Image 1: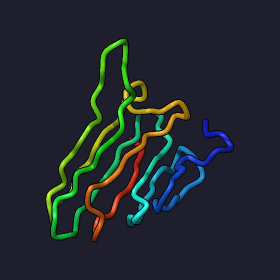
Image 2: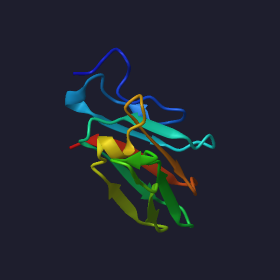
Image 3: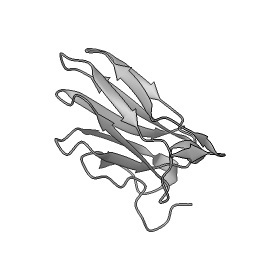
Image 4: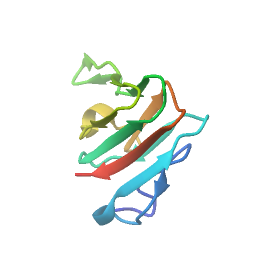
Length: 118
């Protein structure tokens, strides 16, 4: 199941609420560091709620290629006052070599996020 490495390993502020795969709910506000990542088993998805006054574009880094084909980063627009659920995210497309999904936001004021397991 889960190794000694925590399920969510972040550069900035998602707060882990559980220590194992069975109860994988994470929430938190955003920080100016704006580099986020989480361990992905292929059943994880990201919930972004934009309570601010400007749109937020969430950019999820894709692997440079899958089966020899170039894969662009995934971008999802979250308009002001709205929310989006993104995923589940395919491991072979979005996981880096450590099994982490990496993403950033274009706008962080009054934006919250959560990572959930399907």
